[in-house]
Image (cartoon, rainbow over all chains, first blue to last red; front, side):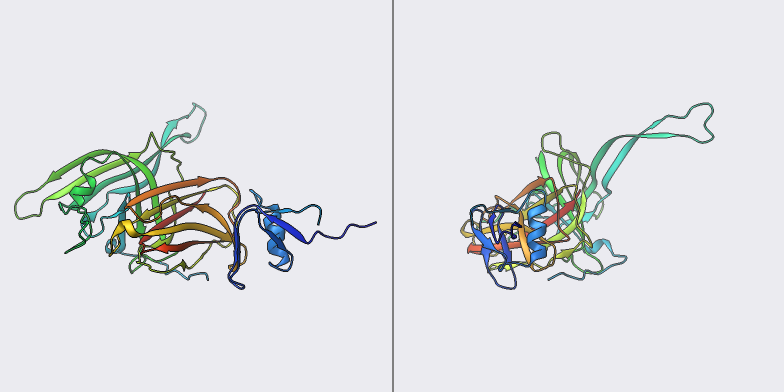
Length: 57
Length: 261
């Protein structure tokens, strides 16, 4: 069985989007619809990480 | 949105100097040297065809600072002028964050080169003679009490214009991400209205695409006092960086230097 990519992420460091005007503080949950996939990938892999994959969703 | 800073040669008149949030540019006359020099140990052996050198300790310097003597005090009444003078700012200084912004053929702009470091003031003298104005002279060397690194050259993210609303400053495109960490300096200079009424959150953000941003660091200084603050961090810095100033109250005059390590 192949596990699908998780769609929800926990915000560890505050993020925002100029395009949508939305901002999210640490502890908030975002989804793949809130930011481009490349940006989310960068934030998951950055040092320190900006997002964490949220379990249980 | 990323700025397109001017490039090329420039003139001394386009420099600006801030010391712990005080803009001394109106009194400044010259700077002898700013930057880093390294000790060099001669490691040449008999069989070497040329001299061999080993680099030693770095020496961070801001020397030959010369300004016109000015004893204007911090003017809480805000009239007729609002800028503390050179003597007020520099006499008796000990440990300071000092920055020099290098405008390119114009007043400094976002993206222009900027120099910044914590310093100990090692000398303050005044001089005069003949028909010359009285001058102040100061020397600074890298601080032994504040964290200091040899990374002293960066770019300006804010250059002192007064704001009265929440502001996303223009971003600076480094061309690529960096991984070695960073240093940032904020000066909150005097505002045209009562300083104590100001309340802003100053945040440096970074991003990969100049549109989506993550917080890199948040300064404690909020613009309610004339002061400076230094932040340092490790890890990634994305290709684009910018300053975001979020208003709660009042106005603000931030100057920011950002240095990639």
